[in-house]
Image 1: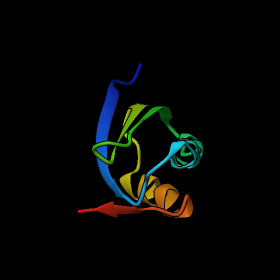
Image 2 (image 1 turned 60 degrees about the vertical axis):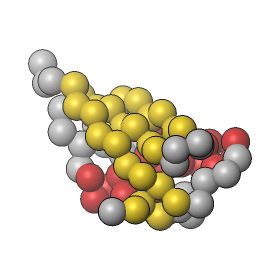
Image 3 (image 1 turned 90 degrees about the horizontal axis):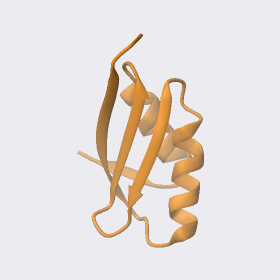
Image 4 (image 1 turned 45 degrees about the vertical axis):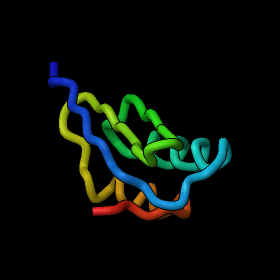
Length: 71
């Protein structure tokens, strides 16, 4: 069984519940992702997965949702 991994992304432009839903939907579709938590106040998206999750795929999913990753 693979170890659970966690990664945090700083996302720009999120301001409402729709933003949370859009980011959650897109990132959840990335292979290996088992959980997504979005914090509007800090702009942080925490992604958990069973084993390594491709960071470029997560960034692309956030971009597809209409938001940008800082840093």
